[in-house]
Image 1 (cartoon, rainbow, N blue to C red):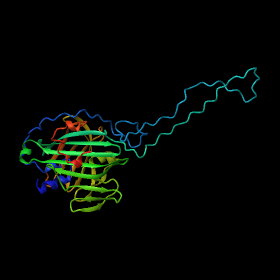
Image 2: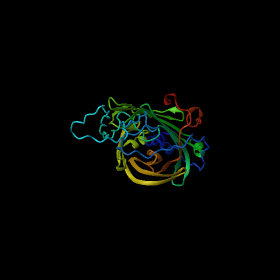
Image 3: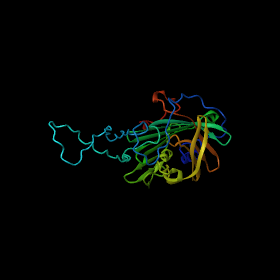
Image 4: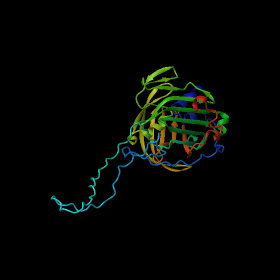
Length: 345
């Protein structure tokens, strides 16, 4: 892959690989792949300030459900005697102790120190990569995430298919690893691999010093809280408050640290092979243009990503399958088996 192609990839991890490749690609459909194990059914995005959420598969690490205050069964009390000396009685009459007034339980505050996931703790999305406005399929991609025990792993693989693969066979593998915090993702390492060979497009975060080591140029640059890498920022958006008003994220590439200012285009209905999604459409420009369509009813997953390069060429990556990833032993070789040793948990 030429230097120019690699530069194009650095602009957006999901589909920039597609922008590198595809001259003279045809309409060939991708070969059949084993289906994902299960359909990924996700709840709507949780509002910013609800009561503490119940434990579910959407919480990593699992948050135990809060036990409500003990409730006393409703009991009709006997009439209360007037404030005078009770009449003498030959035998003492047992009297039930007064039932204390019920305590009004205050709404529980959200637990701190536990990261509540906006999406399922484990899942995968498959995409088709399309060049231009004529619907020319030139590639495919699969992205997986694993959230648990205070950590996260994100993986993305993009490769050419059909005639595009004959003209320019390209396979890009990307991984982001880091911590899962109440504020979202805190990346620690960003790695890439091209056609089975590790590249020098890496980033290593040092959060104690608030800096990131960038492989290109062997430089270290300061980062602010909430900074992301080229893969993690797509998923960090789901954690941001008031995203619908627009936001800015600091993103570390292999060359520099940039501010991605996201403009909100609006809410849109997006038709795909697997159904119609209600989406939030965002756009950011950093020399090239990246647009995202986030599924509002599916944890703000990126179900469509558009990259417009400096020449104006358009590459779309559109979801065609969502679900639970297969176990590694059952994954097709085109997706997993060539991951470098450092990429696997």
